[in-house]
Length: 80
Image (cartoon, rainbow, N blue to C red; front, top):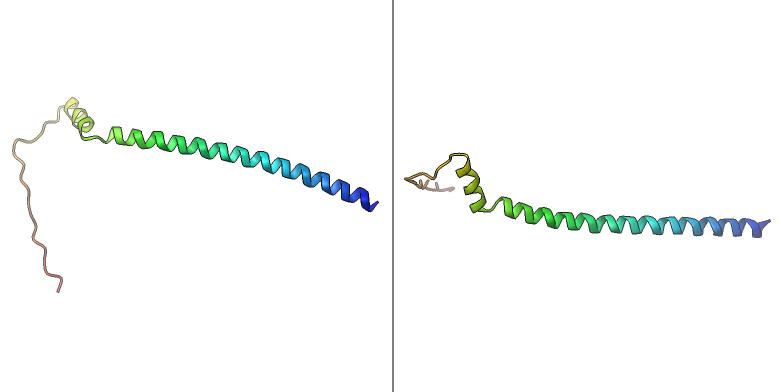
């Protein structure tokens, strides 16, 4: 009777290990997919935020660069 219980427990443990192994493989594949997607999105962000693309986008919508650009410098106050 004890031997039967041990064999049944070993079989159950083996099945659980196999299931866990499949789950780990699925998670690893998911990680690879997410890393790849992250790289694609990073490239897309770089392309969409490039100054030339933003300038074209603005020009297509009737926006123009200003003729006069004025830079204001605000003096820093003493903290002490």
